[in-house]
Length: 238
Ligand code: GLP
Image (cartoon, rainbow, N blue to C red; front, side, top):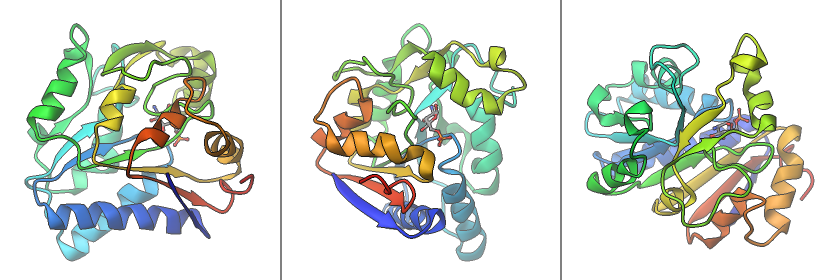
């Protein structure tokens, strides 16, 4: 696992935005694995600016998001589909049918999402954030190593952390569909972004501990091409 520490969150975001743009330029039909949450927002804004100014072409790009809340209407402003449209897809020339999220269509057979990813050639670059309990996607502590895309119950702490996006904590869904650990590890290249003091202790735990399912992000240590991109605050306990 490579650890890269940047002075600011903006520089950390720029590092990953450049990697994504480089991937799309080198392979116009690249398959991107995308994430939601606060951490990717600046990256997405850089991709939009780059597309406007330098016309990076997304016509053939395919995307697969990590996760989606279960039972969520895609038009609901709290859905990850809505987040992706608003924060990225709307401003790119990407085709609707090339953007995928593990939504309710995959509820009965979540592993069909893995089959779809494989059918598109596999993920070239996967972007990840990290939850305060070490989750990646919605792979909560206790998750098994070999998991494919699956329905998961969210930890109370995760629901609390995500309550800031809802009007009240009770509105946060109890379940989600998420890529599994195996799905994520099947990507060719992985970038995890963590910024801010709040992430410092979980980043220390990931770096200091061996692979174990109490801290799902430690599974990344079994992958040959993972970069943790941190700002100084997130790296402050290393
Ligand atoms: C959510 C998402 C994760 C994300 C994490 C961290 O629960 N399911 O994919 O990485 O939270 O979010 P943030 O970037 O807002 O700290």
